[in-house]
Amino acid sequence: MFEEAQYFAPVTADEDGSLKVHLGADHPGFADPAYRARRDALATLASNWRPGTPCPTAEYTDDEHEVWRVVSEALVTKHRAYGCREFLDGKESLGLPIDRIPQLAEVGEWLAPLTGFSYRPAAGLVPLREFYGSLADRGFWSTQYVRHHSVPLYTPEPDVLHEVVGHGNTLANPRFTALYELAGQASRRVASTEALEFVSKVFWFTLEFGVLWESGELKAYGAGILSSPGEIEAFRGMTIRPLDIAAMGTQLYDITDYQDVLYVAESFSQLEDVVGGFWATCTDDSIAEILARTPAHA
Ligand code: TIH
Ligand code: FE2
Image (cartoon, rainbow, N blue to C red; front, side, top):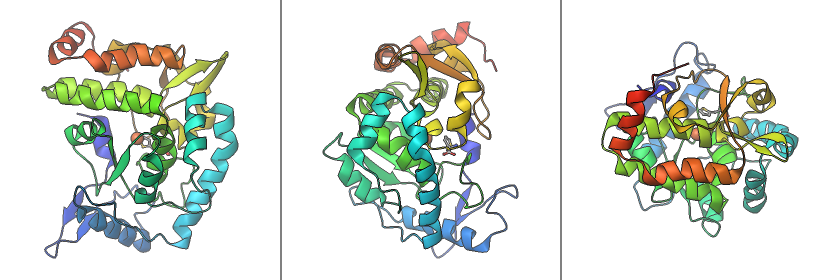
């Protein structure tokens, strides 16, 4: 089982084609009818999207813009302190607004001249094959809803802040997008579910939660750390292990909390060599061989 799956609230369709998002009783928006109505409306909007057309416009409310502003503002100094150079370069060239949530279509227009990546709106969980496969075509499946205003610093559920502030700033840098594309190509090369999950776990511990050494300082390059004002303050205190494909691909993790085990690259170049090199060449057989000699571990 891919752990991330349980973090997407299940979505069902009503007879009239509108979608319903089923938030768990422990979700911060569970008892907030206005929030639930927003989630349903945004899921329905995404489900009506057709490939080849621009992402639909989500008319955000003032309260939603305010959550974006609070998080983006909190991240200005934290990114400068703890974001790696390649992320900061991407952030500078993308120039996301701080005071309002940009539309996915707009962000795609800004990314076009930089790396050619664009977003695709997701109504809920996108199957692994589809999510990773689209990276090979420079398409990034993205949620459009905003985290509940009561939990601005961290959410286990990917939201538009995570997709755009975390991933978008990396998707603006060609050194990053080369890695995203290689992950996408790897996902298309492998046939077995085990191999696909292995590829996705390596993605989790690198492009989602990776850290690297830069001039003797530990910096974050993973989008999950870079979109959370809470986790970005905590990652330096976690268990830090050396970059290791077999270890990352077999590591068990809990998506509901800060990641307590992280893998560090010696440099961005080492990330490109080791992880880019793995995605560029991995096959069902090469991954099966790693799995045969590496037990799952915490
Ligand atoms: N925890 C991240 C945040 O608060 O921005 C969102 C996610 C990253 C990866 C999975 S969910
Ligand atoms: Fe992500």
